[in-house]
Length: 476
Ligand SMILES: C[S@@+](CC[C@H](N)C(=O)[O-])C[C@H]1O[C@@H](n2cnc3c(N)ncnc32)[C@H](O)[C@@H]1O
Image (cartoon, rainbow, N blue to C red; front, side, top):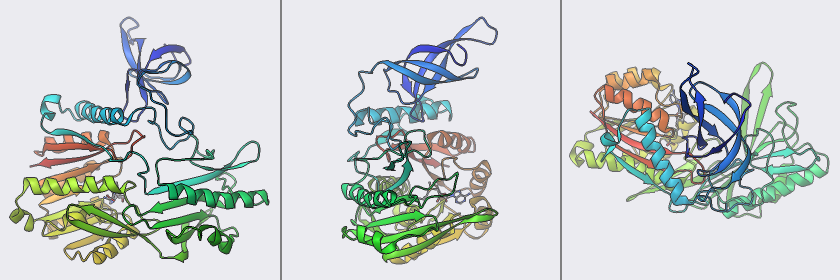
């Protein structure tokens, strides 16, 4: 097989990113030994038979593009959404939910084995499986929508088409968010369709820098019902009154915000936030055991996109502490919450331990974290803004940590930070991850420095997609 060849394959399994994996015969470098090399194929289901064109060929793997699916897999179910397959919002709707969970569980296990070197035997009793969503539909609390103009000149508004940066699907339905959220977007879209008809360039084009609207966001407090609408625009003229009239038919909207993006050559991008009506935040709650924590979420603040699963993930962190340490021990413990965002995990744990220190790069997230700590009357928590690796050494001299929680971005914990954590010598590390590959890499490193992987569980925060979160405990 060489690049450009077309071959018939059967998709044997899924890869971590959600692509299908087929295996094709390939001659080894000596030109003699034939081996089966994995070929990653987008937009296919396990069990599909397809003709694929090899678009990339390396010695150990290839990438194929589907020319034609010749036989659909028996595993497939009919997707619920009419846009599935074109829309970039979901990738796994063709699998029944229990199969999505089974695959995610298997992928975490395989990644721990291949990347982390943890055999199935080692994982016995440690990897406890996957927690799914009670409802794998309507779960998102935030959606971002965009606009594009098609070749026929018509405006469309919705998610990006799969693998495309500009084109959008003119969505009629979406089952990842609540019905009111879709209704609000459709009303806003109808308003922008009218503007488009009147000749206004609605859709922002990043090449020409022309057009009014970058995106529309609808955010929702799943525990409170409060909603926020954000329209992110260029500085071009915007009829605030007309826009407010459109959204005024939805009493659940407590906050309407315009974010103006200022982009000028030679100067850093700047976001100007103005509240057009209502509050500068919407309220969300996290319910974990007896705890009822309130969060004021501001327009640009990160909040885990699936509130009910965030409760389960944070609840798991709390449960791990309670299982592994007595209430007396916990009452004397200091915890670092690294990569803390708006301080949610730290605030949950603060109820069980002596004190928590949160560290986060994003200054506005820390501003929100402090406000939310006050709102919840949490007094034993402190926050520091800055890069974890700059702040950790300093912190270790003033606040020794008994437990360190990390919830890093997809790239995982930097090697230098792993070393700093080992130097800080906490009794346990709770690792919350949104990327099993970097988690397995880091767990291996921690394990080689005396932190035994004691518990891992996967959590399905994003049903109908291939994303997987994990929560783990590493104990000295
Ligand atoms: C996966 S989010 C976790 C947020 C939070 N723990 C939560 O559950 O909402 C990762 C966070 O790490 C922050 N971050 C990324 N790199 C960082 C660094 N070098 N130092 C401190 N924070 C960082 C990001 O701004 C982001 O808020």
